Image (cartoon, rainbow over all chains, first blue to last red):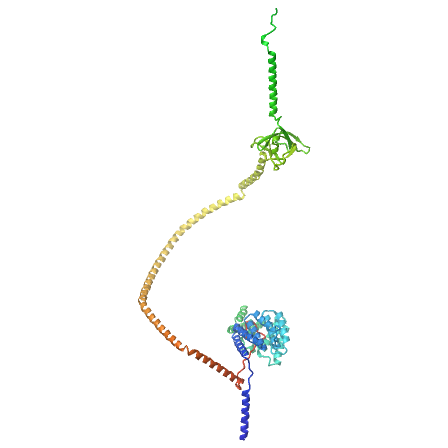
Length: 283
Length: 331
């Protein structure tokens, strides 16, 4: 018995020694600096300080370019483009994405290429250029064979179709995105589910299916409230207001627009607050 | 015996005397003829030149021909040509021919405004070639008095027409001038009426100005009171300044003392920093080394099991793609 205990203790000590001797996956010093910059940039972005976020992502991008870290280059370039987009500098965002998508010596992973193309589509949607948004979202879909961003890209394709006036296609892409999230829960998320539901609601509103649109948007709102995303809650409330207005329920519509204004004011979203105020003044 | 004597002494030499008288008379007649011929230039060498004019008006035979104010010939002959032009032949003294170039022009001039007409030769530019015998000169007609009168009439006629029109316009009761005069008359009447109204207004205003003057007097009285109060305030300020003036030296003295204290503290601080000057960099260097050591130890600890499983490895992440991302919106 004593011998067995001794053997067991020796085995445990050997295992412990092996564990201690094993080395963790390491990063070089440049990659560590780049990672620190990337994390600081993400925090700045979350705080709404887009210019600072862009500056930090740019530094991280430079460090990754110096050590030819392909994934680091793609990650920081995509984030830099998003920071420029959020800051309202679409031209700078296009420049970064064009540089990333240009054929260079380092191959860009297909999933990252799909994300870059999707960002281009978003920029064109912002500019109300539905034709180019459709083109780039199709390109993104072509690059995204089962990539993690597939539901987002499908929803984006649906938004482009809706902007182009193809309501049926928009509804179809929303359904595909919901299906992709449903069949592959690991790749989807509640945020994209809410987005797909919002798109479906907007498409149904455009088709005059008000009741169905109302039900879909309420689901989206529920999800966004659960996620605590004020910008998305604002979009849901505004769309609900428009649905109520289309149904002739002016008082209900006014309530939704007022709620949307309160949400945007609380989130320091001046543009949103102005949009909601304009909607209220329209009565 | 004969009654009359056949030889009368009174008739002696009668025959030669009569012959002498006849001879003298003949000589006088001859001299008169010669003088007349000389006078009419019968012995002066001459040459004939001609010119053509559209009309013979003002030109007549025997008319003088002048060059630079000198008479050098006459008009010898006038004749009408088959083409209705008038050919005028001049006889010029040959000695002046050299002064008349062949491109000279001939004109009709007048001695003064109402004097006799004469032919004036305007010498041409070609001085090398003089006019030849039977040469033809060019004629030009100067503007004479009648032409000038005609020109003057042509110019005055429209002016007279305008004057007539203006006079008619003035006389026309419906014309602008008559209407303007009527308007001026009306305006003058209005001005007179206005003057009367202004006069009445001035009378009314006089009373109001008196009332305003009363109010102004009251305002001035109030202003005087205000100025009195201001004077009082100034007196107070002056007293305050006196107080400050008295207390300022003491304050400055205190301030001076405080500055001295500050100087002494600064000197102490300088002494202290100079005494630390040698030790402080070493302490900082050592502190930095300690921090680096601590960093390495913490890094090492993070990489060892089981801590490395508890601390997340810092990685680079892209901002997640959201299908509703747009400008100006974060997640």
